[in-house]
Length: 325
Image (cartoon, rainbow, N blue to C red; front, top):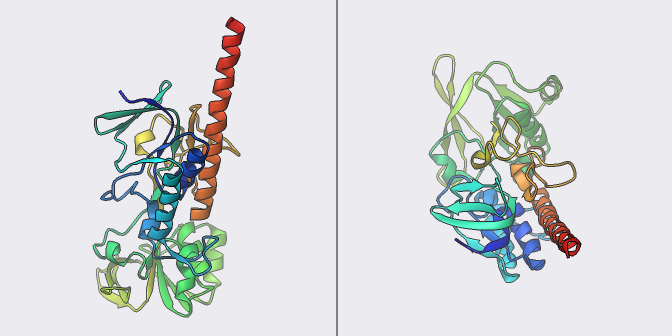
């Protein structure tokens, strides 16, 4: 059985690594279980590892590559004493303190836990997606819309997220085609009205994307009719997939309170979960902003919340000991 640590951080995207930096600087000696490189979810570095140019993170006027930014985060945490384990958590037990976390058959214990396992964008399931992600294929308009100035692009989806992405992208693109598998949108009425009134937005109803053309960058998409099965090509230089997100919270189901869609619930103005001593930050609890900078901010909050919670526990124990004496 391992020593009892002050904090274990589960996940290593912008939220988890920022939490590790703050926890390490507070002499909490965090253990960061960062995930597996081969995993489609919970991978080390989070979703930014799939992003090429990041131009909206403060402090980098010329932009920075996503993997490089995450590498800098990790190096900074290591500099202050954070320890990293490149594995995926297989089991947890938060029923009593110290909390227990397993990686394969190895058990790790800690007084506090910071959950930062993030979320993953739902994808179309095409083989070309992994090759073209960050090269004309994106899941974040606010992250990548600037790169498509003056181009013709497409958005897949029919909900609020898809319409919001498409509307935002009209600030840059000359034309945005919304590809939807049905003949009507699922988005709210106000979102639909905005899209229908936007001259730059066109709709391709009753179609799905069944292929993405291009070896090194998106050069068009193949679409298939859901009515008669006919196949055609759409000439676009960018494709945004907006069919939803899925938080990586399966391992916490039945343990931590979460929304019906799986996002963790925290106390307002705090990162505290329903279990005292367990905190959550980043995209695993944020279904609104989903930005690297907001994830990093909540990671800072989680580390400070964990540090103050530990101090309160120590003060309480000291008070009890004094009273007993």
